[in-house]
Amino acid sequence: MWLLMFLTLANAPQVHTWLDEQGVRHFSDQPQPLSQTLTLADANQLQFPKSSPAPNQAQAPISSYQLQILAPESEATIRNAQGRVRIQTSVTPKLKKGHTLQLLFDGQPQDISGTGLTLDNVDRGAHQLQLRVIDQQQRPLSLSQEQTLYLHRPSSQFPKTR
Image (cartoon, rainbow, N blue to C red; front, side):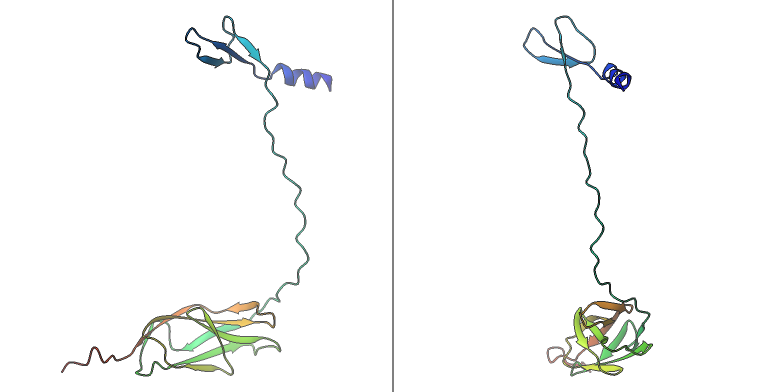
């Protein structure tokens, strides 16, 4: 052990410092006339704490639901003066007790009972649709692919030209 410590100290880099005629301090690894040898502290070492195991949290059950938006098709254009959009869905297998099907319409959840939902007074423009199944704690269990639909509504500002 003493030999190991001696070899470590013997191989430690030495730094020499001195002042020149203008009073500027210089540092070097080579000794210079009138230089002083500096004793260096050990190199900085960072000790990482041992990671603690993650707390045992109740994990969301793994779901094998197949979710699909049947209508409207992805990238569909809908023309409706009232802004009415009918969404038809498919879920396989049937939802388990305590699980709820939701439509995320532009990120806002809408509960779906059965296999469809009608949205009224939807603004014109592009909208994002996605299905999800959630449990009683509102944790998502399954997600469908996101789809886009485009809604066109007639405007009194732009009447049809003949």
